[in-house]
Image (cartoon, rainbow, N blue to C red; front, side, top):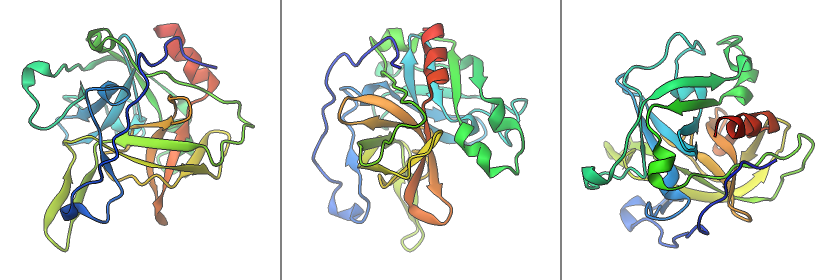
Length: 250
């Protein structure tokens, strides 16, 4: 099942690894002027929460529920929630659009219990934005849902977001959370509502898109690293129901 729109241009992936001062981090700089990066958004809140989301419609943004409200409780929405497409630290402010949300859609499976780890596979939130950022940007990212029994293992993917990494040994931030990067890898351990990937992610990249590089469709949302394995990223799969919801609101 596919959303109504496709990418307006084929993604351009840069080959330049980060400079030597950041060796050990398997990231690439994202060129925010081209697809898919220019439709990825940095999210900030007054509660000092940071994260990533991405445009999926004229005024729609998809992210993780834990980026919109705390403790799996919709009544605890973060204040001052704002998203910025193609955000880059130092970019001319006149080139940056922004928006809050007017309405949100989420899964009741995520809100059932703050102690229920199985609810992580329902950690998604579709935000109806107060500003038509997709229209302003001229397009948005296409999404795809595969059947629950589909074997996605070995599909090449790209994970995109705003990593925020503190180097305790040096006492500095290696990544500020203000510059978009991406990592690459493949899928393994496919499950009906989630999958794992070895595309490396850090704090701040959570809520960002995972793109099938074979066809340029978004197929999942970055939840975060597994608690017992920092090199494995947990990804919430896009389901047919979620893609249908996106389509109905576009």
